Length: 203
View 1 (tube, one colour):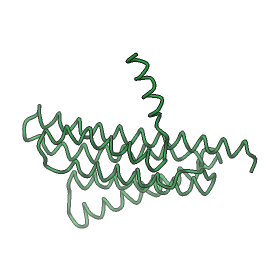
View 2 (tube, one colour):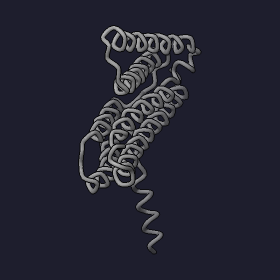
View 3 (cartoon, one colour):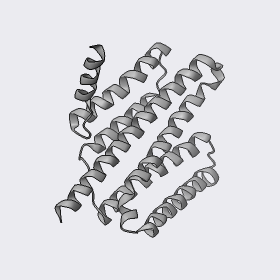
C-alpha cells in the first residue's frame, strides 16, 4: 500500500470517528433536553413520551452511524450488498413483528419501537463489518467503547430521577463521553488551542 493511500485512509477514518462522536453527543443532548422539557412543561400523562423519545433517538443514532461507516461499501461500489443488508433486516424485522403481534397476540407501541431500534443496531453492525471487509479503514479500536458508553447513557435516561439531576446529567454525560474520547485517543480535542485562545482573549 502506498504512503499516500494509507494517509488518505487514516484521514477518512479520523473524519468518520469525529462524525460518530458528534452523533453520539447530539443524541445525548436531544434525549436529556427532551426529558427536561416534557417533565417541566407537559402534563404528567405525557411522561411515557420520554421513553419513546429515548428509543427513537437510539434508532436515529444507529441509523446515522450506518451512513457514516458505509463508506467502504460505497467506495468499493458494493451498493447491491448494502441494499441486500437493508432488505434482509427489514424482512426479518417485519416477520418477527408479525409472529409476535398475530401469532403470540401481543401488540404494543413499545414492541414496534424496540424492534425498529434493534433493526437499526443490526444494520449498523452488519454494514460496519461488511464495509471493513470490502475496504478496511484504520478505525481506533476504542471506538466501540465510545458507542457502548453512549448506548448506556441513553438507557440511563429511562430512570425516574429529579429534574435537577436531569440537568446535571445533561452536562455531565457529554463531558464524560468527551473525556473518554480524549483519554482513549479516538480523536484529539483541541484543548491547547482553546486554552491559548482563552488566554489571548483575557489579555
